[in-house]
Image (cartoon, rainbow, N blue to C red; front, side, top):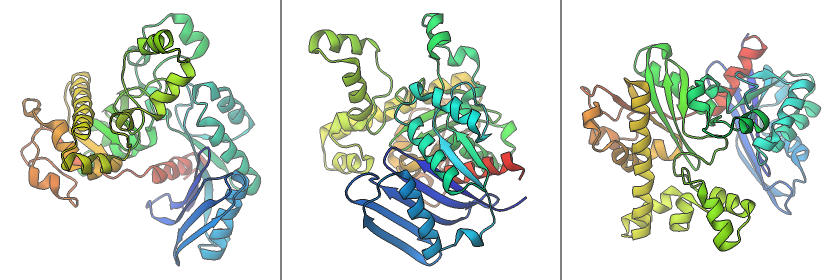
Length: 395
């Protein structure tokens, strides 16, 4: 079977979509509806005849998807003229129930609904996108692709927290990990770049965007990852703190009267680079650092130091490493982050080539004789979702 997959990523106030050839990864069209439910929404559609940009009220996700379908009809390609074999949906949290993509049915909807307490900001929006798409596109199979699924290969000693057993049994408290579609895609691309099968390589993959995560990948399987029960744990991110002492919640409750909800919101939305500098855009942090801003310099140092710690930790987990792989916005575009993250790690066999690292067209940033390659690989989560959806429906 060959054909296209309509990939849908529904957020709380946005709907991102892409019509992807699951075999080649080529996107026939992409689009984004933002500020859903506000007085003035924004819809952009990129198709074969160019880009369409519109500002008008979009009441809800159903209206957003209707607008997307209309944009396909008006600006191309018309969905009826394309061999669409499935609709692939990004779902953030699959808990320990979903280790692979799955065909959407009422049972899956019920299971994902039960997992809402683990991802209260994401799963409800994902579910709404699925329900709307099933109503508007009832004749196509719908497939859920889970961010957490790739990490279901973690061994128990890697996903288990040292907390009362009852917490895990009753509340599902354990490490789940996220960005799984990105880590899966990039692992395959890295193996291909090395000229080897994914089953034959050990990788440390660093997904560095507004959200950041590190994953130790042994033979194509995730064996440890930095994000945990939620996407808050691990690396320093745009607005998330990453690793910290869990006693901070209790301290702030005692000395500042802050509720758990207030502290949780601050750690997710007001911390990370934003907490350290006031901005969450790494490009702005870099501009301020270059201008001599001390807070920006400190934020950069904290960010890269945390990266280096995880590289070292996952090197120990894997025993041998074939490549360090940088991906996503910061990972792909910031040569200074890559250089700082691996600086001083020559004893581990990691030798960066400064000229290659500075060349945005070169996927290899290490020297030819470096025992551990340093790779720069663009991620493509939409293509990965399309491929996984195609596998489910028999491609």
